[in-house]
Image (tube, rainbow, N blue to C red; front, side, top):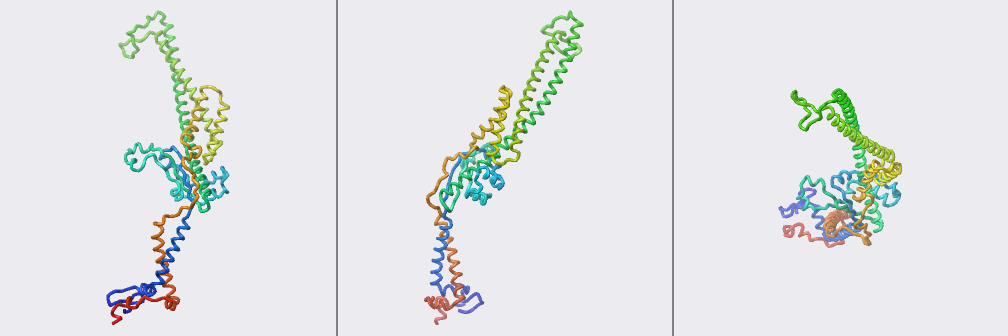
Length: 400
């Protein structure tokens, strides 16, 4: 064996071996012993560190995927979470502090999973136009705890309640904003319709007055015949004034009926607008779904008590009440647990076949580092172990 450099040695003039490897081969017994011990220690540490009580649950939620994707960024809003925890009185509980410290996009991705009505294989056959209307079958949750199964179950229940509350708040805010905008647009359309109806009534009144004047000037007018028509052609014949009066009065009645209909719609729309103005006053900046729902129900109750019991107001109340019915149909008012939250009695750990290769690799690296360090600091410690024969390191040339 000859020296090539500070880091390599040459065996039989052919093989160049790093010097650290020759040192490990010289003390292979202790190296193997350390590798076994450190690998076992790392494996046990991995199993102990990864041991968790894992609670699982599944809630039923009927939401379209597009709406859920729009609501998902709100899940990681710290201010929204704190507002909800204060509302339910969970800010200072272990579960509440856990959510505040852990909430993030990565946390939601690991612990909250959207379940579809179709699996991946079936979704390939769904057209793009139908994909927008895909509904979810529910949401699955899983939460771990190092303390107990009850602690994991309590954290999961609070997480599921918070996610449901976020979806409820986003849905109510979107629906109320949409209805309020539609009410404002409808008010403009109704006002334009009333303007046109009043203009038409004035025009018909003017034409009716002129027709009556003409009829008074020609009292002996011949009654209308079936073949007579209204025309503006030079050779055409006009209906007699009396017949025109009947036609104009009929149109005038229709115009007044249309005006009454528009005025009724205007009253309804004003009543509905007043409802949303009161709702906005009660919930100007509420993000919590439970609080927003409470404000909505309170506004609805006040509106129902103050409104006259007639068809006009009852129709509006039924329309705004349908929003709460939709909330219940989509199961957004409270988590609808189909499964769980489970309360595990035993800890679950990472799979042994996944942890073993990593433990062996890091155990070998750590054992090698320890062996080389000890040899460098105290070379005399090798005398306690039987070294590898020098012939295995230097080759046959050294023995001859």
